[in-house]
Length: 246
Ligand SMILES: NC(=O)c1ccc[n+]([C@@H]2O[C@H](COP(=O)([O-])OP(=O)(O)OC[C@H]3O[C@@H](n4cnc5c(N)ncnc54)[C@H](OP(=O)(O)O)[C@@H]3O)[C@@H](O)[C@H]2O)c1
Image (cartoon, rainbow, N blue to C red; front, side, top):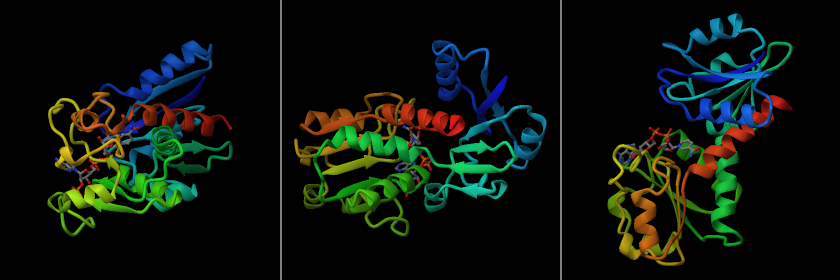
């Protein structure tokens, strides 16, 4: 049996475990591959996990280990190095461990789907965590100028109070890279004046539960084009699968 899995501190109901179990079943791979949840109380435990798990091809990495895993790896992809976060590890036959960031694949695909051939002149990236870093990487790659919005004046270029009607008219792509609006707080939405949005605006929410967040619902109400985090979620999982299989 070839083994894959997810490391994190508390895993509960994991999307990845369900996604890969269904994929292996659907594609007739259930007898060949197994995807398990590995709850690690400390990142140091990854050494023992790798040592004691036979045929471990690699694993996904989630909160709080996306940065902490880096010292335990031999190499990083250029994306993982630039972003400073790893969500996918491949273990080579000689034991070397390579870190990747497949969130960027999901973000690339999502922006292509949302924007089509439109090239926005400016974007607002809400939040300054790991997901925001991956979003910023893809925006830079696409030459879309962006401003980072944070609650903390020291962390971003703008705070929520700075997002005036003028700022919104100059930044037609708005990406929610915060957990605001995520289940169970589904009535919450990032603090912007939604009535300033128009059909020239594009809203991408990294949150995938619920699929239609309050952020997207309010944007759609004023004519904005919207996309949830669900496509990103599937795309990052498929990108990880390709890395493990290549
Ligand atoms: N669809 C996918 O495949 C996918 C992949 C990765 C992540 N995500 C989602 O993306 C979101 C962010 O992930 P992350 O790992 O970057 O999370 P995180 O590090 O916990 O938070 C990101 C940032 O959000 C801001 N924030 C947190 N709580 C807030 C609040 N109550 N009000 C306003 N801003 C707040 C903070 O920025 P400031 O302190 O600077 O304001 C924080 O740095 C999560 O909802 C996650 O589920 C989705």
